[in-house]
Image (cartoon, rainbow, N blue to C red; front, side):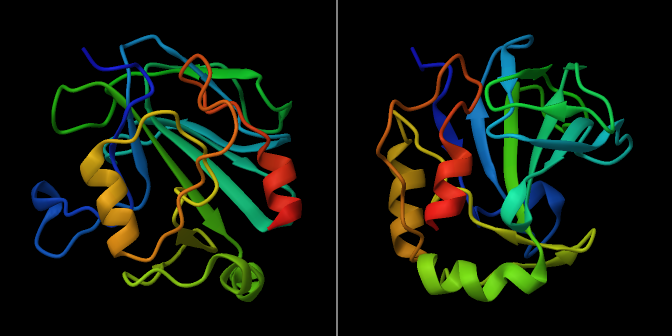
Length: 191
C-alpha cells in the first residue's frame, strides 16, 4: 500500500505519451481524488482555471516572494481564485485527474522562477545535469526536489535526482495531509 504523499515521478522523467524528448517539469505525488492540496507558502494566486484541453487540467498557480511561482495541477476542485492572498498551509484545492491522459490520480507540483533570479538559485542549488526547462509564462522551470521535503521518495525518483545532480531536501516533517505543507518561505529566504 502506498502512502498518499508518495513521490512517484520526479524532475526530468521521460514522458513518452507527450512525444519524443518531452521531459517532466515537476514532481508527481500519488493521491486519491479529493485529497486536500495546501499552499506551500504565502503568496498571491495568479492562475486558477481549467486549462483544458491542456494536460494541466484544473490548476492553480501562486506567486511567492523571491521570484518563485508554484503550480498545482490535475485538481478535481479549485478552492482559490485569481487575486486571493493565501497563507502557507491554506487549503487551495483537491487532487484529481483533470487534464490527464491516464486515469491515475495524482498532484503534479512544479516550481517556476523568474529568469532574473536564476543566477541566485544556481549559486545555491547548482545546475541539474538536465538543465532547466525553457522559459514559459515568463518563468523558467526549476527542480522542486531541492525545495520540497518528502517523507517517502520512490527509490527510482531519488536515484534519478542524484544522477541529475539535483539535491534532495529531506529535513523537516515531510508532507502533511498530502498538501505540501512546509516552511517554503523559510527555504526561499535561506536559499
